[in-house]
View 1: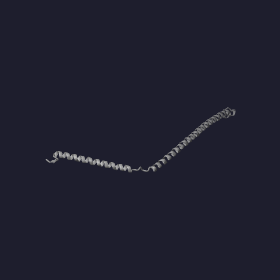
View 2: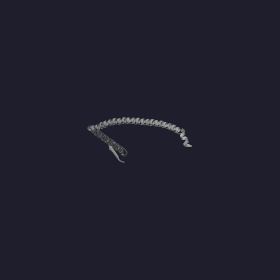
View 3: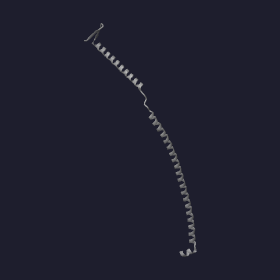
View 4: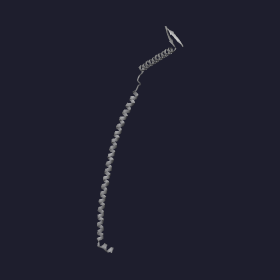
Length: 137
């Protein structure tokens, strides 16, 4: 077996492997820590150099959209009120037309009854007429 003597200490093969693994692990940890720290420094530098984008054009468009939306809401409200008024007028016209039709129908029925009664009277007179009796016999 391999054996190393250093400063009066003898180290055999199994311990050499353990020491080499431990040194490799420590080296990898040191390298990972350095890499992480370097990334941190790079990120810190980028954050210092960062400038916020100019959003004024978006804010302007947003304000235009808000104004347009307000105008549209007002216009829709006016249309709704106009439609309500139009519907009320149409209902009034329909009510007046219905009332006129009912009144006209009632008057027409009364006139027809008067004419019917007049016709009955005339027929009765004609039937009771003595001249009518002679023609019928």
